[in-house]
Image (cartoon, rainbow, N blue to C red; front, side, top):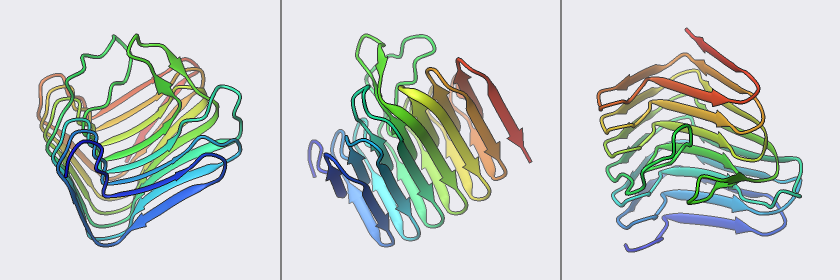
Length: 219
């Protein structure tokens, strides 16, 4: 409980980082992620997976499942993969940050795969690689402002991919997109075969932004 009191944190400065959750995790603090894998290395894979159980977060900017490749612009061949294959995710916090137009700002989201970062001035930066979020089962429920269900964001050089073959996503907060994918210099692909519902103000089911093409397939 408390600021940045993550449920599980796996961090590396040079190598891969991976975490899988099958039990019960609950956090109650701002920026306190449920499970959090992060690496600043080059050529690394960062993976965060919920296979079963439950993950609940209650603070502002407190995501449930996060894979984050935060290397500098010189890092290459990085991959951030956030996966839910079963279980449940519930986030009730939001964000105090107002986003720049076209800039993804994350509140308390369910599933997050991220390469690079966006500064408080809206300036993106990051290495070269791929951000991929995958949901094949389970449920994601968010209720705060900017609480995305699934987020794949590439602020560096490369693509962002969301693959939803099953499961459910439900958001109720303002600007809380069901699926949000963005790529600063690459392309975005979203394949949605599960259930996505949003009820908040200015919250779309699927929102995709890219400088090099967007593909959305919904079945």
